[in-house]
Length: 356
Ligand code: SAH
Image 1: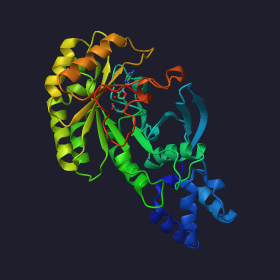
Image 2: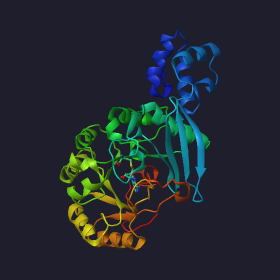
Image 3: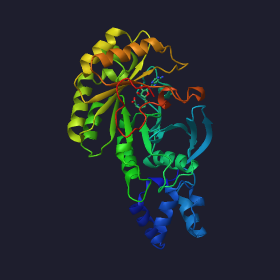
């Protein structure tokens, strides 16, 4: 694979243009074109010889939308092809406060969660920051958005992949999204979801980025967690909670737990009470969602009634929680790694009991 221009920030493009012996203002033209979602060969106003020179070294289309499915509720699912032929997915969701794009951080995943579709084939490779950024730029452009008038306002790192397993590229992506003159999405409007990689959670606390931290907890004991999440053998719930505290102390931001309700595994009243015990008094919010069926997996969703009772018990115990609606179910947008989960409301936690 050649290099990807979206991996370059404006300063790097300025150096590149200098290196190629071009006039300095070409860097801004190139940067603006990329930020508007153009492929290299269609960046406006660039002289042909420069484009030719760049094409020798850079991919024309680092990411191409090859399919879009639209749900009755307005949710859209995107299928993208990367320059090396790998396929990844994204989901675009509309909310009152803006539009959220669910971004993938890896092709596949090596965390092995039993309920998750993106882990079925293991990890293929990490995405570069530019490949993550390109998902945002392409979908923004597809909706007629520009950097000045964005159609993608919020980002959730809940597509395929474990963001903290691709740490440096993900951090660069978050910083590049916030860079001046770029797509200009603040970390406050970005949610990073992790299965709980404790050392990287502590590292994240030191980055000085006001990201919304979301942790896929799903269980109340390490033993039960290890049955569906192999990562539980490496990191204990107690250590995950300590890392959340570290994150809160360093950033002042509340954190969120994902809890997917699975029949016979984690969804009865005893689990709800144990979850209250674990989380009561913490500056956190719980997003409940009924498991989305993955046909390759032998796990089933808890019933709607069980989910409501679980929510009621959390509220009764004083733990802030929401039961999430499964968006885009008719287009498979609701499948595990792509589903409409924490919905990029800028980190403002919805009121307890609210269903969206
Ligand atoms: N690797 C990261 C982010 C990607 S998954 C993480 O683990 O958090 C985004 C969310 O979807 C996670 O909370 C994940 O546990 C959840 N998920 C995966 N498959 C699911 C399914 N079939 N039903 C419900 N939630 C699922």
